[in-house]
Amino acid sequence: MSLLVQKFGGTSVADAERMRLVADSIARNVRRGHQVVVAVSAMGKETDELLRLAAEVSRERPGREMDMLVTAGERKAMALLCMALHDLGVQADSFTGSQAGIVTDTDHTRARILEVRPERLREALDAGRVPVVGGAQGVSTDRDVTFLGRGGTDTTAVALAHALKADVCEIYTDVSGVFSADPRVVPEARRLDRVSFEEMLEMCAAGCPKPAMRSVELARTFGVALHVRSAFTWEPGTWIDEEDPEVEQAIVSAVVSDSSQAKLTVTGVPDRPGIAARLFRALAQRSINVDMIEQNVSIHGTTDISFTVPHDDLAAAEAVVAGLSDEIGATGAIADPEIATVSIVGAGMRTEPGVTAAMFETLAAEGINIEMISTSSIRLTCVVRAELAERAVQSLHRAFELEVA
Ligand code: ASP
Ligand code: MG
Image (cartoon, rainbow, N blue to C red; front, top):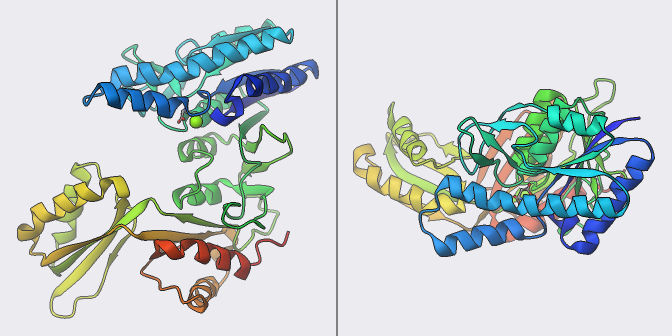
């Protein structure tokens, strides 16, 4: 008998029929003798819909009320899923995050889990029942309902798996795992059997949308292996786990691209201590999340600083730069929203020379200009024109022969 934590995403429970299929799969696991704890997301596009409604009624959108509103989506899903389970003869109880003992900080709309007190879930399990927990929610140290943020149900599942010492943490979604590239862009992309936490985190940071980055971070911290798989085909998916020291790591595991960033270049700033510090402090004060930064050598005592920010933050970043221009002595600022990043990720590149050259040659052969470069020990990222990103991904996937198993 194993204890399984199973997370079902919004598309997996998008309508009554899908809800019944999910219930059926849970019921089968229960009949096989497993104990199952479920974390469920809001149905379909419900979270988006609730956020849209909030924007229609209010400009203020106080965090406490936003969290009360948004977590209602998961509450609806968990009750319906329990009913579907009862229909199949499985005793199931729904729990809000608060009832499930998920205690968070008070940072509304993106609360962090501080502690899980799983006593009630344990009792339900001991009584042979299936606890179904509303995802992405908890109760704050101020006793208010909190939302963990978009994709937070993955985090709920990881936290529950850790607290209950589950044997498996399964993340059911609408894709059958983690792929060597987005299959919509590269049809011959391959499902990866296994990726390390570190690779997955780099892939998340480089634009891979699922699973949610915070949940992977938490899984790494707790050492909870994740199995990402499809609630449509139910076939085995991708395991995300510690790097296996016995196995040689792939040099490149995946190609990822991201068009959610824009580039801002501050021109002609004096090359002396304190300028970059002043600029990036001002951006930080506005909570603008800077990703890549590039500064060139100065020729006549001045230099250009380029950096990328999320599209949504571009206007705010431009305003910050405009406000600082005189103080830091910049000659101007150039905003460029038409960029994309293209990244290759692989644990094996740590020790493999020539990967960078191969990436640059591949892009060169396609006539794709590289505008910025950033690296980590297991990732290489280039900024290119947004309209060339798909071609860049396709050619890199081919060049590194990722379609071959
Ligand atoms: N329903 C929330 C969202 O769409 C939480 C989740 O799905 O993880 O972001
Ligand atoms: Mg969702």
